[in-house]
Image (cartoon, rainbow, N blue to C red):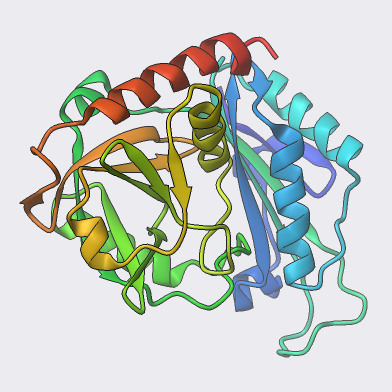
Length: 285
């Protein structure tokens, strides 16, 4: 069965979907995107994802081409159109086709694209064993809070991890932890979760929010702040979080063990809490 996508008002097979070569997303990377997890045919925290989309559009001085209600109806229809119970919705808005000029076009019509793929979460082996990571200087632009489609720095940083056989690249800017190339990063020190703040150098993750909410609800202490690289390298635990990876323990960083080189006790507790939350709340509304 051909994959059905949404493009500019139409649901159609992906093979029939085309975008003009002068679309500013293609020419300039002038657009934004969202990734929305779906559990048991239910989009998780859709309103929060749409609020983040609105923030990203505003950051690029683009008007939102759909209202929240219109987005919800489109996402729900795309979910129903595809077979998987658990899905990952990719949503992208560009400024649209226009003659090539750096300045904003006056009358361009935005390009709106959505597709759904099966949601693939970490395997039990990855969860049990943990994953490795490498580190790098954060070379991205100054507005990482905007979920822009211009992701070449992220691509290069993520490839560093791939080349090293690792799962992620942890980023430091001026000696301070920011995030991963495609994830948020948490550390644990003496039983306390350490989280970078939501500023312009970090994408405000929806899973990041869930982790801190679960910590607060279940009495797990946490601290939000700017954490030096040396402190992160000496942490007892490190985690990756994202909509698709959920929560994963990092057990080696730059080939050196994190803590005792195994997923730690705070990770195990948070992972169980997250899975319970997913089954009780994400899947049932």
